[in-house]
Image (tube, rainbow, N blue to C red; front, side):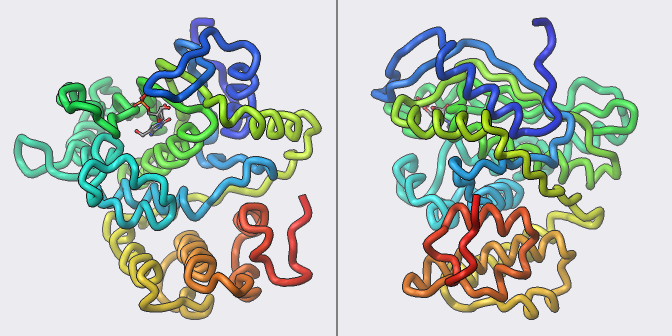
Length: 341
Ligand code: 5HM
């Protein structure tokens, strides 16, 4: 195979990668105590990077986490606080309890680099505006200094993201040193294709393909039972449900990201709530209103543990997101509104 295998959407790639690692792995090892099945060198390409979420009931994808992480990257943040609210386990990867290290990819791409006051991302966009067929649109993430940190709990798994404009479309290539293909791969593909689409919007280009290259592709032994269930579901083709994936609005900018995160912070801290009609009146495009609805769902789940999620909020969600929320938090659905698989 000289070129990566091409898939129409992420779900198909994800299922194939898991299938490969289940029984056709090359190594069984336990680096830093994490027992895993591994292959060296794995690549795939997705034709439609907007189709970035798998609809697999057994996998119980958390769409709130995925949007939160993508916005955290786009905002160039490195704080533990926001991420850990959506995924408490990330705290263990912080050395000082306040900031993330190597996995704060956004802080390396969207904040000014050491030379001048322009971010690597803005420099790449500048380059692609002037020299369309360039091969130099690289956003490096991994730094050699990370290896010098003793017992580094958070070393970048991403080596670089690479943006290429070809025939009016913006392609992205992601280079990973390592990827947990059950867990990290889901989050990484979601967030990096969001960054790709954000970049395409800034450049006024159509979205191209997304290509993912992994050095160490592995799955944890602890996840094998769930992966088998996911594969059995995919085999039965129950995941033939197809929900349309919306386009990121053409006016999305860095201020959209910071405006959204003002509301996110109010909801996260419990200082406010947002009813669907309030979200609709805030002036965001319906695409981003959906993300605020997800943050409100999460507020109710975290701050009102005794109550089901309010029907009005669930009803305002796009059917695909409602499906994911219903499968992720089945016990928090209003009576009679439980989601069948
Ligand atoms: O020992 P090592 O630093 O490689 O462990 C990190 C683990 O998190 C690996 O399983 C890696 O593949 C996974 N990971 C991932 O898949 C971690 C990050 C965070 O940098 C990521 N994707 N984005």
